[in-house]
Amino acid sequence: MENSGSMIMMIAIYALIFVALYFFLIRPNSKKKKQEAELRNNLAIGDDITTIGGIVGRVIAIKEEEDAIVIETGPDRTKMKFKRWCISTVDTEKTVAAASEAAENKKEKKGLFGKKKKDVDELE
Image (cartoon, rainbow, N blue to C red):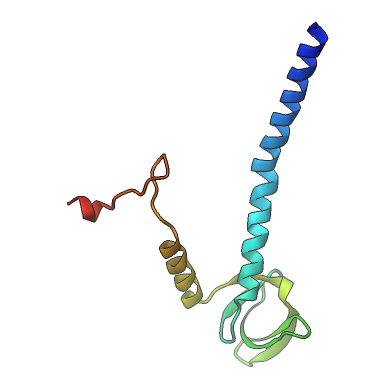
């Protein structure tokens, strides 16, 4: 009888460890990968980007069949071709502003039990 109780406790501890690992390691990493993929798929001609190697330039062409982009950089407008996976950040302000505005419109303010919170403006 004592062994079954300690066995259940040990399994519960392992389950808790696995759940904690999932929420602290696996889930944030998958969210980050999803955001990076969305950033790369929403890339448009004219966007300013930074590659993972630190090269800064403006997108002048997107080659879907090769999964590549062409950027121009520097005052002499040197053209370089990169794969999409090498994009680190999109530095264009319009993209950042539009994304934050879309995220802001998407979010609904909810309270502790799922009820909508009233805005401060509505209370006054």
